Length: 121
Image (cartoon, helix red, strand yellow):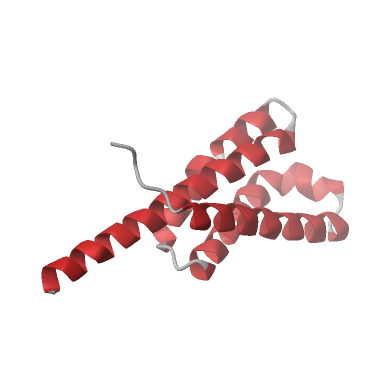
């Protein structure tokens, strides 16, 4: 049996995450010099990714812990891209994976709430 997916949540989470990461990247890029990213990029990048994931979890009412786990797992392609010295190459795939993760979370939440209603009805 195929896992259920809330496509609306998948799209919205990927787009919101991408927009949030882009806005913060532009702000950081405009205000900080290259030496900051050489020294602290290893921490700033995952920190921004996690903060944006928390924003998505609040905006879409997803469980924060599971959303952060999905962000960590979906960010692994970006890590591979960074190690290959093509930093932004992994971001599109990471956003797709994050969206799929969130879509699955939403479907699971809806399934569990439906079962709870059936038991109490």
